[in-house]
Amino acid sequence: MSVRTTALALVSALAATAAATLALTGAGPAAAAGVQCSVDWTTNDWGSGFTANLKLTNTGSTAINGWNIGYAYTGNQTLSGSGWNGTWSQSGKNVTVTAPAWAATVAAGASVTAGANFSYSGANAAPTSFTVNGAACGGATPSPSPSPSVSASPSPSPSPSASVSASPSASASPSPSPSASSTGGSGSGKAPALHVSGNKLVDAAGGQVVLRGVNRSGMEFMCVQGYGFSDGPVDAASIAAIKSWKANAVRVPVNEDCWNGYANVKPEYAGENYRAAVRNYVYALRDAGLTPIIDLHWTQGLYTGNSSGCSDTNSTCQKPMPGTGAATFWSSVASTFKNDPAVVFDLFNEPYPDRAVSGLDQAWNCWRDGGSACPGINYTVSGMQTLVNGVRAAGANNVLLLGGLAYSNDLGQWLAHKPADPAGNLAAAWHVYNFNTCSSQSCWNSTVAPLAAQVPVVVGEIGENDCAHSFIDQVMSWADAAKVSYLGWTWNTWDCSSGPSLISNFDGTPTAFGQGLKTHLQAVN
Image 1 (cartoon, one colour):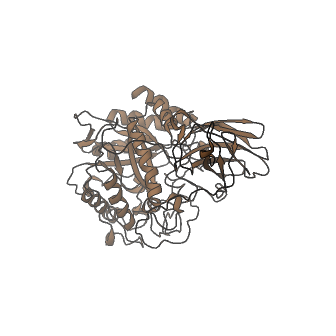
Image 2 (cartoon, rainbow, N blue to C red):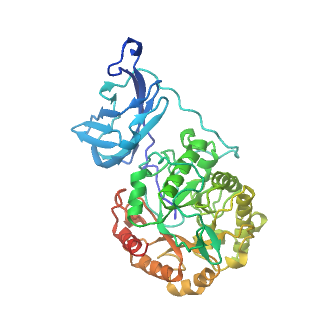
Image 3 (spheres, one colour):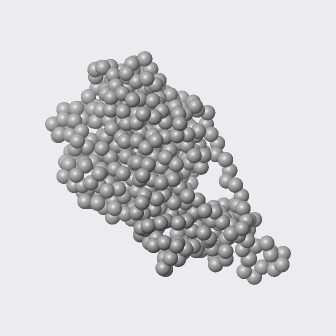
């Protein structure tokens, strides 16, 4: 499943920057210069509401211990919800953000960020001034942010355009936010180290692990569309909300262009900046006891054939197969997480070479071998064998998920075309929605069950497009009996009537559709 957005749904960010010299309480003449700071304000506006992001940077040489940001709107902008990474409040037109306990100190040269959603009508003018701890923050120019490192990449096409996926999906309400901080990837986190044993995923002690959780969409589209790293908060509170449903896994869709640092992506959301955001979120999930699944969701490749999602070379929609840049992506990801067997790699979201080439046999050969086996796809395709080889060559033995044809809904010839893997750590990825071809228990019994008897099967996405949960109830009951893993699409606050959305608020408030998954997870996990 991919996110459907439009240029009108997400308006480009507006920035207002101010900085000031603050007097230290009780400081003597030697400290007359005070503490320097800057406050950056950016917004993503969708017409009747917007997300405000604040970034407080300490541009001085002394730590700021405790912070409180104040500013005012000139219109009728009204705070919606509680915000994240700070305590947000509003009195009339005045807004205040107070430091959370875990980020109260801003070291010299460091920054903290906070965000919240607002509703409004009429004009939405940017704030003209800010205060920090009661003192004006305006006048000095803040230190520039370091330039991100950019990986070598092919010359990209012009700026990405909004796109529609081949599968039904939801419009995103933009709410980018900073990544949650965490420790490095040593494999010492709380999520289990996983490997494949026969047809099971098992932990280091050999006990079977069945993954049941959610998808967290956002990192695959926000960066390439120029709005941030994530749609909504990815902080400790948002992770705790996912855990409150008794989930034990989170699938994180990501973007090739942003990770590889291609020039079509804004530098602040590309290369090392983006990689750091993904790393931090993955590690935060792992340390919270949630198995993170990194999913390569959107990739490069110009495809305008049958079921094309967009007429764009860049990674702005679901393509039928990964291109050459996907091999670079997975080599880098594998090098990053190779020492952390708790992290699972989903090699490509939803292959559909069956829509581009002639016949199922040809499609499965394209899926495995890529290159000349894909005559209906104009760009050079990296087959599953190429991606597996790249991950293993980087020294990573992590579990790999491989989705089949028909947007990962068809696993009929998966076993016959299974790539070679020296690590023996391959599992099948399956997606199932009520509108898919294989959406009946008879199909699951005839095609998925025989495969699940030989290799682990992870249902990376389950969902339905009717705001109800009767279909996924069937899927989950069937999967539980077969010891098959599954994750709901998606932990985002979109209107579930336009696509599967599990929540109406990032505090974990479920939609009618999400209530079915929540109730089931709390019963079985």
